[in-house]
Amino acid sequence: MKATADIAPGQTFGSVTDKIADIVLTRRTPLTWFAVMYVAVLLVGLFVIAVSWLLYKGVGVWGIKIPVAWGFAITNFVWWIGIGHAGTLISAILLLLNQKWRNSINRFAEAMTLFAVACAGVFPLLHLGRPWLFYWLFPYPNTMNIQPQFRSPLVWDVFAVSTYATVSLLFWYLGLLPDLAAFRDRAKSSVVYKTYGVLSLGWRGTSNEWTYHRTASLLLAGLATPLVLSVHTVVSFDFTISILPGWHSTIFPPYFVAGAIYSGFAMVLVLAIPIRTVYGLKGLITERHLENSAKVMLATGLIVAYAYMIEPFTAWYGGNEYEMYAFWNRAFGPYWWAFLLNVTCNVFIPQVLWFRSIRRNTVALFAVSLTILYGMWLERYVIIITSLHRDFLPSSWGQFSGTFWDHATFYGTIGLFLFLFLLFIRFLPMISIYEVRELVHETVRDNR
Amino acid sequence: MKPYGIIAEFDTPEDLVRAARQARDRGFRRIETYTPFPVPEIEDIIRHRNWLPLVVLICGATGTLTGYLLQTYIAVYDYPINVGGRPLHSWPSFVVIMFELTVLFAAFGAFFGTLIFNGLPRPYHPVGNARGFEAASQNRFYLAIEAADPQFDAEDTARFLASLNPERVEHVAG
Image (cartoon, rainbow over all chains, first blue to last red; front, side, top):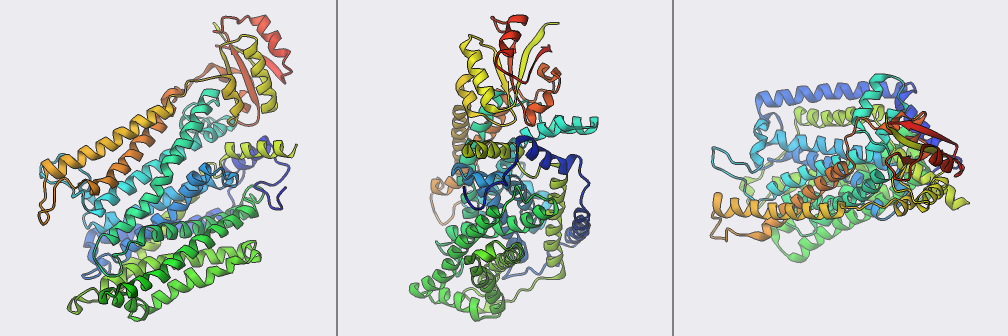
């Protein structure tokens, strides 16, 4: 028996069902939920104002101008989509690897993925300038007689991100079906009964249903695994396929994927640590979950640190003066402060995770996770701004800084994310009940 | 009205598996189990032809082909763009979208295949008429022998189910 378990001892099928379902169906919503919801709604208001102003005036209200035309929008896009990746890693890759500890954190990690992808999608759409014409991105027969350019990584990105969002949604909903049926069968009022009844599609738990459910889950996990790696690879192609110094690099795909998982696990912890305290779920989301997530962050953080080191080395070893200048400029140019903060937050501070006492200390872990989230945002900011603002010709150099509306839109999406997530924990089972029952069953059997 | 069948309630998945095996060995063909989580042993007792992997394979292959044909048609015939004299049929740059559409179509196959093969959505099912059947999605395990079974006999079958040591046995209306 391990010192720290996947699930606290003494649980039964009924007790775990009660614990998770009662949060939604019978228990009073905690005051903390209302407090965070209040902040989230304020930020959503800010988001609505920022987007309305942008639509009214045009993308010029952001700080973007030539040479830095990507600015905050693409930084935020890459940051959000990276956060989503940990959810898919937990739900798909750890399922294929038979890691039982994932069972109590996969549901809300998948929800986190969906909402993060939704926030990510906002930015390239708004950055289009005329977002209401977004459907021009897709190939369809049209009277203008024009079609997308399939040799462009930006078009690949459209397909990669929309496929990712769709597959994540299907996977999430499929997993929800048995739990929605459990909610239906516990309903005390007819409105609740009908709502969850319709959503559960009439799930009964027959042997046939479970056989197909299991097969479909494994197949979707098998599909989502290469998909999640491909999505951030394609995102990195947006940069590497260009010839810009600081972007044109073969290390980008693995470096971006590692960074995505790094920030994603940080977000998992930022969400999980308050949730398990507020809702009293320490028996289901145990210290082992937090510690394992911290270990994943440590490992992916080291990959990111390695990429930080090998990039300037390759530039120096390659001997290309523009490439060498790009990295000199990154560390010592006008944006040195961003680079220094980025390395501090992503490389130096997270090394405290080597100590078990830090990994077991929820407050410290929460603080380190926030640091990593900030560091990963800065990483994308540094990559985008420092590479674009000084390229080959000094006559075309320029400076960039975010405006009030840049910040407002970004904080607005944080509000949107929190808003969606709070609705999720209020109305849906935030922990996969049937998978925790399986875990109880296996734990009981193993101990006999 | 014709009855749906008889169900027996069990406390643990092990009891259910033992009972389902005895029911099958007794020669019943229309047996069904209702469990709150997947019990893999049941799959060996009540066998189903699982067509899902094949469906997903076909959907995935359709996606690959769609991706290739879509891009080739547009890039070569419908809207050719000459970029410095490079070939129009530049298939390596089509691979990414071919892959994405493979995954997308296969995922649709897996999701909708699961629903279709299970007959979902299904708003009404007679087994829901059983008293306390709500527990099937919570913490109880049920074995049903349907009235459609050739060997079904209201009294005999009920007696047989009672001999399997269930918590209780119930006749369910259709």
